[in-house]
Length: 111
Image (cartoon, rainbow, N blue to C red; front, top):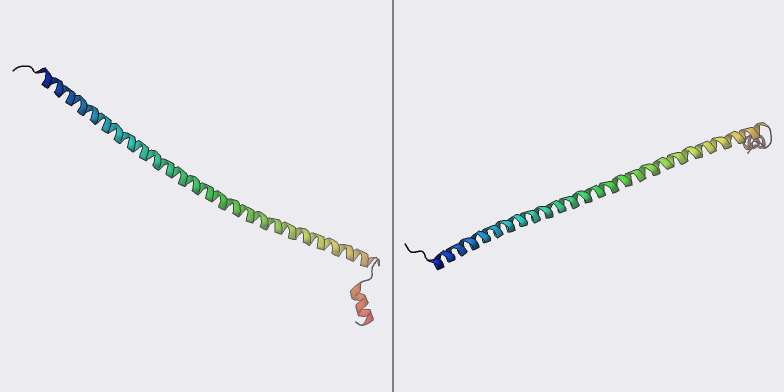
């Protein structure tokens, strides 16, 4: 058999081109998988962050509602304390005849 340099160089070029194409194709597939994975991870992180933010807003609204309720309860307690203090002051003033008792005056006048 006679050695043909043209055929050998063509065969060598064909093998080199084919192996280069296979290497390029596998790297392209690997890159596309990595890119798809990164996109999926980014979408999952965004969904998780959105859910976390929404839950934070819900908890914040519940805390505000609870604090408003506690504020009204505290306000009612303060009003009740002031009402009791006013009754004590009125009782003191009536006791020492500083002001007349309107109920006693109404009964005395026959009204």
